[in-house]
Image (tube, rainbow, N blue to C red):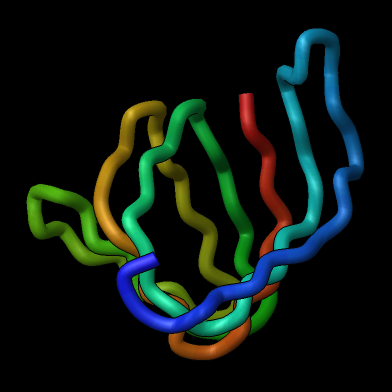
Length: 91
């Protein structure tokens, strides 16, 4: 954590053989942390607001109904402004 005390919860909907692919629902409360995506991840954000900032400086602003793809080895920070809820699929 960089700032705050984010809490996460969710529901795992599917987990394939050896843990890949995986899909579920993820909920996270406000806070800021370093982020390293270890496998390709597609997300559809249902609620809340957050900002992902890639180590290159590229900024992705998230609000309800935003779809985002984070490729394997994406690195940066995530700042949750308002509790987010997303549906995700990791491969």
